[in-house]
Image (cartoon, rainbow, N blue to C red; front, top):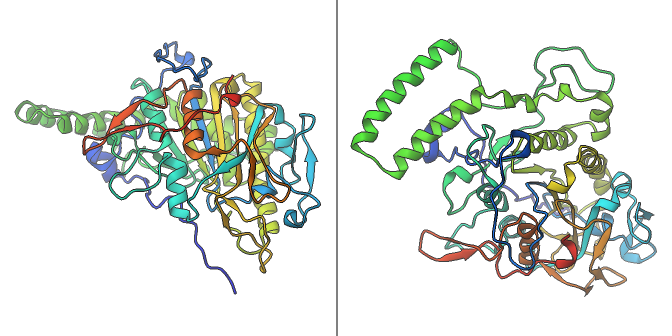
Length: 454
């Protein structure tokens, strides 16, 4: 019998309409406030009081590759070739002696010296929605509070208001947002599968001249030119100034700031980051065709221009049926996209300051079911990190010979979050206050995995 289980990731969607844009903070638009300063623009990073287990080589940006649905990590990072639970998946050597990945990841295997795999992840959340929430916020859902996501925390901690681009951008799918934090830390959603602008000729490598990813709500409406837009904004500012004099409040200030940031986003020259036609054709080709490859390249271009956090979504990992074919097909996108992203960042000397995290909400059962699929399995699974002060070329933890239990170095989700925040130079024990007055730490009593930190 077919298992009709839908991916539940991202029920909170943050795509913007023009009306949302002009609602400002009340509409949750401020996903691009306080973006971080960068060396590119000559701005100094703030110094943080680092806890003992925090790396001093703090990453400045984060790229999360979200594998929605729960990937079969026995067919990615922890192959069990020759065992019944391993199925037809083969193990291949990597660029690091003694470390093997599944044969679905040949491109990533070539850059394994930059990669750390945690093969001993453990959690208790086996439903998509609860698992997605846990792996985005570091907390189990409680129903009493909506916790801020890793993206929103990163935007808040690394952010600087001088950058015109959003500092938390979601590519190819919805994601969790600011929770109880101010709405300016919500994500800005972009569909990286957007059309081509400029009508340019096709390049040999697959990109087109003027291959521009469309960003919603940054163009004037029909019948409005620049002069008319400026007249409207001037009139609006006059009206808001009068209102602010009589009704000064934090909400009024946020509303005004939202308009100003929307204006800046519409007119910033940094929007050229979305023009992939500026990249070399051979590099575009190496990222892989399709939406995911474009998203990976765009993520690099965004962090290159100072964006603090980018999440890329690649769904389709809920493989209750036909697991091995589905994983192989998904990896035709995942492997070249992520492998080239790591290599590209390294060659541009950006990898040390860019942390890449690749994960889903849980793993899949070692036992292969009657439909040649694997079911939900949070008890023992794997995830990947690279760059950003993380020690590459290593494997943390291990499962037993059949992948059923973690036998070495269990790592919890709060431990993972503590590790990520430490790599960012942020104290995982730092607390934010919820609307009910409760102080909530960035990590839920997690302990950073010191073996991963430089």
